[in-house]
Length: 403
Image (tube, rainbow, N blue to C red; front, side, top):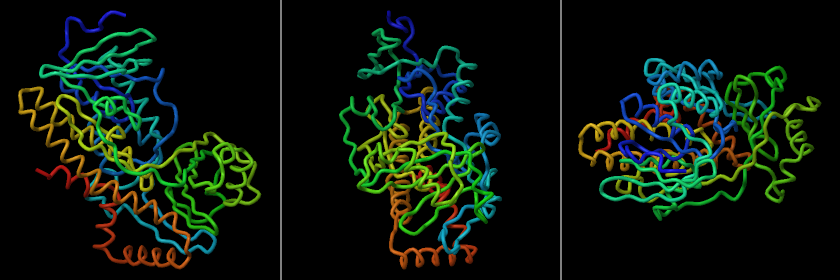
């Protein structure tokens, strides 16, 4: 395959067509900046993956015309809860208290794949041919004038050039590895599993919210209600291998612990994944910027990963648009500082606390935590502060204010 852009290198190359890469691409194209997006897969990611959109994220996506589409494809959850599954004690949080500060005072439960598919359709309509599937970035390099990507597209080698490059290619980022950057942190000792089923749990369990975190005898689990299914998450027994954890009889047994005699349960999806907490040492190296999972990983507890990545994309493109128009490229150092701070000081810290709290096994500590939550709910100022923090509203504002 010959060089795709031998006559024109005046564009931004984006590696990765997940939520972060596609949101960045749409914002740049809307600002009149040419892009090319390289996606190693052969089609938009079909796995549900993340399913929680927090209020400020949907507010941002409204700008692109994506918020309304996602609301139609998902299920708003104004309330969410922590609870003791067998005995019924609970703490219910109502995001309605944020109604004067957001257009979306709820958690939107909508699978990540819907954002990817809708954003891909919009990008193709606005800049046909910009999104390339079966396009693997093999090597990235740069000089003072631009960036170069050696790639394999549909099995053929080629070279692409651009002025800037955004690495949004996930946890195993080729871009990050090519820069030789450290990705320090840890992998949690237990894996997690996410089960998707259309079973109507709400007809069998009283007082379910759209988002539920339950402590139960011998284990803990979460339940999120999207438009088409319930997503049940938990950690398998530590001594169980992956095949056993994904076996149908094991999954059926777990769901039967939630609703006895409810099975057999139809299973739409079952995905096992390791949980990491990692942060790249820096998010900018010259003309190459990192965003989303390529730059930071955290426990999914609280639904911060995808949201934080979308926040990265908006912050980065705000600044890159200005730089493209002649602004100082020091603005991109500001992006790196702001979003690195958000990842380390807010997203990772809070998600780690969420992860450990949900997996607490001691019944007395569980009760103590629950009583603390109930006290927070009964204090108007405290619950307002808590919901702003847990919805990433304060994190977004703190990062954007950092000089």
